[in-house]
Image (cartoon, rainbow, N blue to C red; front, side):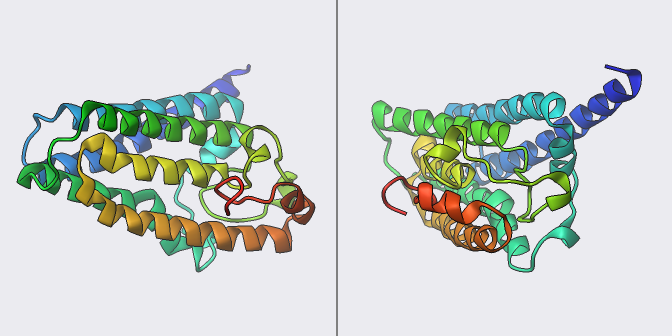
Length: 236
């Protein structure tokens, strides 16, 4: 590795860490300010897991796929399709933040009775599984862009290995699992009302991206015939 490459990867690692820190801080502020307390063990565990996952993703992406790491650390909304910009915002920021705010309010006002430890544990395990599957999908797909686009000049082609053997959009499937696990993890069932916003936007984005890939990415139509499920194996 020459000095230029090392410096570039160091710059990308710094940008990724800064982005992850800001995003996690936004979520943490929304969660704990709405809860009105910092004394919330499951809340801190949730924030710590999210931040740790961002660190793991950065550690995989920066050395393994610096081009994708660079793409995901910059905000290039001009490259996004008109329908993709609002959906991306909901799925990646506003939807999850709304869920955390409602969860914090639930915690403050005692909206949800204390859940059995095993039920909350299911939420923790499912949430960590969602983070893990999302990381696996990103590590497998070197075209895991922030916005939907086809990069033919970069050799963009169909990815059908790893989790892409089971569903066509494992990153979105992982995001849905994580979103559904969050209210259980935090013991705040009223947050499911906000989670519905994220899930709805995610399903719509999945359908529109799938239609785009069928129309524009060579080989995707054949892949869709082999792997028939978009998000849930055997269902949709």
